[in-house]
Image (cartoon, rainbow, N blue to C red):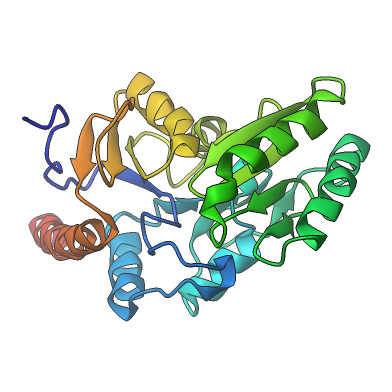
Length: 261
């Protein structure tokens, strides 16, 4: 069967590059803290940042502090917690209001479930909460049901996201597409062509947003129902491709600088 998605596109200096983290830049692990990043990735991202004048951002459900920790000593622009946190190059962290009583009640309802099974993890990100079942995949349907029931008792201002081995609850109206659109309104991203890569259903809003802006969307991993227009076979292949893009854009940037001098 022919893959309906196009192969990875040729690199261009007019890109604004937006990248999901888990499953895109780093493989999924049994525990969110156990993720390992390839040393070559940090080198590639640093080079891409130079070639694209800083227009490289990680767009993730993780907090900004975790992204910084995995990519240290590199500090990129980041939209964390699906856009509830953000940081532009050379600027401080901007965080949404943390007070959300409805989210706190959902967390309280889920806490006994996690306490009864050490394989489950309830990750409190302050503005969002995520129930991980990576070590108990057979409980997927049950975890999804329990989270949906906990949220249903609230007033409708919360949204449930179903990701890979995780169910997350966040404020409604917050997603990666909105986060990318906001970044595109600011330097160094404005005026560039957005390119977003992600691997999960939580990245679909981002795919749709960049498609609407005339950009490029890349699904990392097995193809399926998706708004993405391009595909990488998996995280390792995508990271390798980023390395090639880094070399290509560095050469193009050098040529452009030489032509201007």
